Amino acid sequence: MEEKPALGEWEPSDLDFVSTSNFSLQCSIGSHTTNAKFEWVDYRPAVFRKLQEFGEIDNDDYTDSIRGHETLKFLVSPEKATSLCLQHDDRFIIKILSKSEMKVLLEMLPKYYHHLKKYRRSLLPKFYGLYVVKPQGGKKVVRFVVVGNILRSDISIHKKFNLGISPQGRLVSKAGAEEDLNVAFHLHAAVRHQLLRQIKHDCSFLKEVGVTEYSLLLGMHVCSAPFEAVFQGHYTTTHKEGSDDTEKKTSDGPDATQCDPAEDMTTDDNLGSSCPIEFASEVGIRMTARVVNTQRKEGNLASLCHPRKQSPNNVILYLGIVNILQGHSKLKHVEHVFRSLQSDSPVILAVNPKVYSTHFEEFLGKFFPESEAEKIMKEL
Image (cartoon, rainbow, N blue to C red; front, side):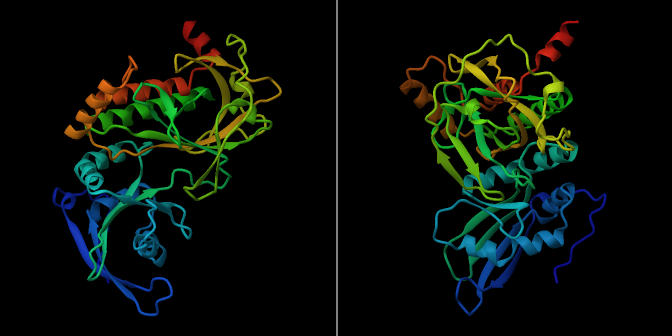
């Protein structure tokens, strides 16, 4: 049996950040009666065990989940799926990595570890293990990382957005075709402050490690009805709990209703009449909010357009930053220059990590705006 040192207050050494562990696994796949053999390489096992500890994950339970039949069947499947949410343990998602993505993760791991140690409420993906698996005697090598499931919830996730910055410098949904958004979410003032402060810390880290093109994954439970008026003219998605699959639907409704942005209905007293008011114990998890419509101005989020009083549109949010393994390489720089020359748009967002971080943080500040009550208090 594999010997596992007790962690406790123990800290990874420099050697732990370059170590690997090799072993073999046997497992029956499909209808075969004989066991298939796999060569399994565990990268930086001591470091990831400590990261599991940060997430209060028992290593024995984790190991049983990750090394089981479901994982190995997915890894050798000829289908081109790139991720799998484990059906028997929806805390974890298996994500296939390219060689370059694995390199980025290994290079950032020391700084990532110390960032997660300092900011336990970080919105960054929670990486719990990094592996390379190959059927014994086979040629196919599969690299994958185990990530915490951001949208794991005991309530239904009705809508899902993947929010990023377009090359033209707009906040868009990257689920399917890129599309501008005309909604914003009002949070309780204290929750909003914690959220934006953590986004600032996480963006500073991503800028430091030279990562770009990341996005914000946001899952939403809709509390109140009617709700669809807020999303008229936009697609909606349904999300099966514990799954990463979405079904795209198109709304054929009229354009979003225009109304007076000066009318304020965003005080904390109005937040959540049909959802229980409960404040998130952790940033990004079960955050009660109120969704409002916004007017678009030159493609950017602008003045608020509030919904009618009879439609409070209360929601519960789950969110986190995803796709953080895209490094800023020379190839990326050349690609950006080419796209700039080919585009007619006067505003092109550089793929530079510093610029991307600034834009990302700025737009999320608009996506989670201050209420009128907060603005008045600042002026006093």
